[in-house]
Length: 70
Figure 1 (cartoon, helix red, strand yellow):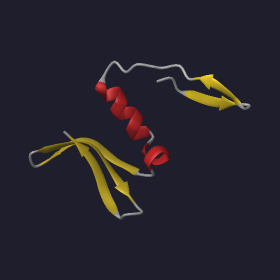
Figure 2 (cartoon, one colour; figure 1 turned 90 degrees about the vertical axis):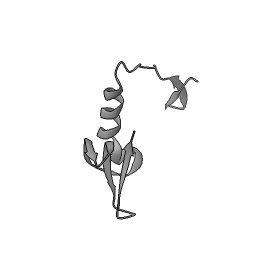
Figure 3 (cartoon, rainbow, N blue to C red; figure 1 turned 90 degrees about the horizontal axis):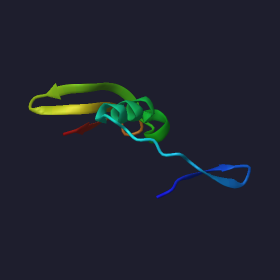
């Protein structure tokens, strides 16, 4: 699906860019957690017991940690 941005009331196509490595996606999301999700980045890539967390963030509205793990 083509994505567009608005430039002076004209839709301009946004060029797609591919990710070569999964880590590129993780980095992009982690660097933009606040602006996209309203979350504060805490840390990445660590284990809690038998679980590996890719990204750990804090949601100040819910006063809770948010994580994504595989």
